[in-house]
Length: 298
Image (tube, rainbow, N blue to C red; front, side):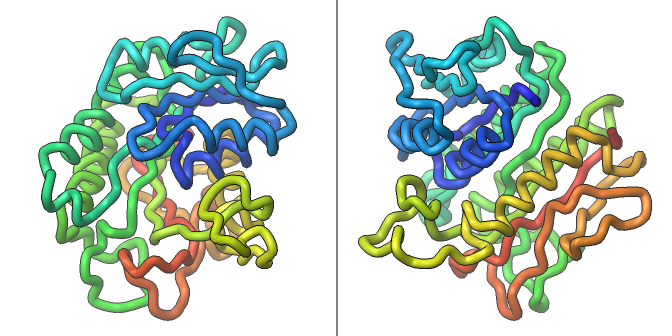
């Protein structure tokens, strides 16, 4: 099983990803500055994963009681090299093998009002993270991107080959990070990079303890495409299996990973699902993540 670093693990997608990965047997270090969130979702994740409550180990450091600790949580900022180094060294028994990067700001209207804040957090923060990964000899990354990259699409369903032309600062920052990843992969061998472009996820875990939890959420049947639902888990688990077992073919450039349920010639992790008939990047619908691969293969 792998030891993974999760940025933004207290967020909506991050918390569901943490639970899925813990249930699959992996150990995690989560770094989150809790801007717009708190440690509470991770307390719920620990309980749902059967690890018991998180214990405060220091002023900004929590961990489960098991030894070795399978879930460590650090309050820190991805723009701080010190916080990132602390996260990479958090475990005394395991080395971080890969990073799932969910940290970032995500409100379109706010990005229009505060574009510099978005460029600093989303772009400069991602640069700091990649530099920390290089320092700690970790070169496997999954980036949480967005289907807002497609702007106003020419047609729907939107394909992964549709033009990237964001129309707001939030989308521009996601496109900039994707370009940074592509440039990095082209400049150095050995990087294993993937990105997920999703529409707006909605819903909650079947327990109602993480995610959106309207009064009757825990009693409602879970849609296959909701976070925590079977299809969302298949996407995440398929992506990690592809990273861990080298199912991507070796070549340069951008390679979509289609969600047809079949691996194309050369091999590809199943990281995408076909969208519903009329999706839109900011519609609030959840057709499942779009996955695409950048750079050198495994």
